[in-house]
Length: 178
Image (cartoon, rainbow, N blue to C red; front, side):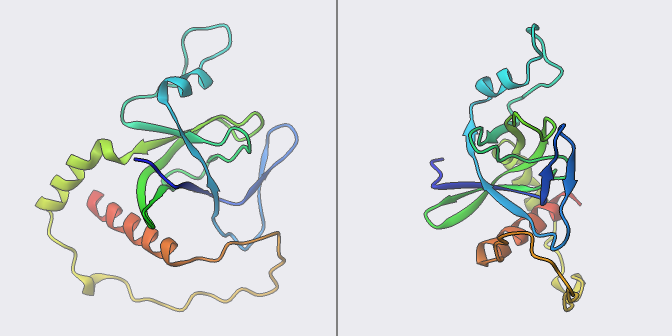
């Protein structure tokens, strides 16, 4: 699939000297980063231990490797389950779910995602054999809590229609697993 734009999300954090990380103060908006797909054979090189042909990390055909090694955009601990989406013909497609990465300090390595296309037959089978959920059983929509005295920590991207569609797609995917 030739993506015009491939993005992932991460919780707001800053990397401190020595490699430790600190989560930023509210608003706890998800951050997004444009990343590229990295061939798994190339990606495996990043996860080999020095002076060894073996690695404690392994990549399999049900995994997808992505990142931006120039800007350092990557997922970090706590981001598992986050989306990797691809924009094709003005439509966003869910390509992967964040799975794991090395610790988030320089140098940044690629991130590993679950490859959803690998599981597409299984997902379709679950959809076919599962009844549709009753819309009446959904929890009521409430008003979000008000934020007071919030100090700005930088540019925050406002949610848009594609974000709403993405969250509904993830919700439907999660329903399949229940």
